[in-house]
Amino acid sequence: MDKKELALAVVDRLKKEYPDAHCTLNYEDAWQLLISLRLAAQCTDERVDQITPLLYEKFPTVAALAEADVAEIEKIVRPCGLGNSKARDISRCMKVLHEEYNDQVPTTFEEILALPGVGRKSANLVMGDVFGKPAIVTDTHCIRLCNLIGLVDGIKEPAKVEKELWKIIPPEEGSDLCHRFVHHGRAVCIARRPQCAVCCLKDICRYAVENAAAEQQS
Image 1: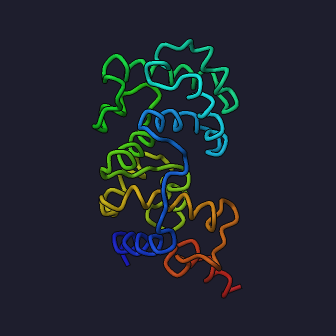
Image 2: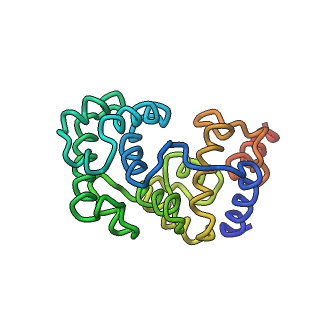
Image 3: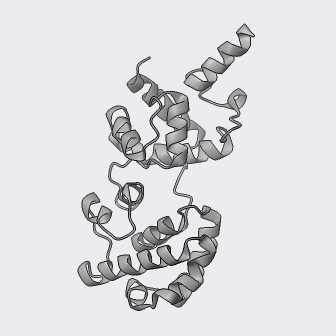
């Protein structure tokens, strides 16, 4: 099958395997998701979800964070790593939301991407999860699984993977599929030790098929 046919098969199988896949970060508002995504860089979602309630207890609104001293933000978010840069980005981002968007997250990809500390991955996730727009979130799970399965060929740069996936993934499926990649990458297609024997994609995944063929020949 070609890549578009493979993509449709992957979408269908993972949808059956993980029907309720969703963002693994806890948040109530779009601005909180932006903060969680910034804190999640080089940090686990579990740690982020432990820290954000402490942050919102002291600074419960966009306005409160916009007016907060960066050092006070850093004290709270430091356990997530890179505390100084993350605190600065959170402060700058909340100031922009407060001063330019009336404490609301803008609704276009370009405006979200222009916010301090926000990259394509985060902007896509907000577009898909908050605003229900077509989105493809190329995190490490997505990039790794797409290369193993054969949806892309040796491409590791997030923006390039995103560009290739837009060609083969139905727009309305992109956001949920990327969440399912996360769930599948954590539960079955684990980094450095994929569980191919129990994988729902084992007969169409390039990595699994090639490994199976190599084992038969040995």
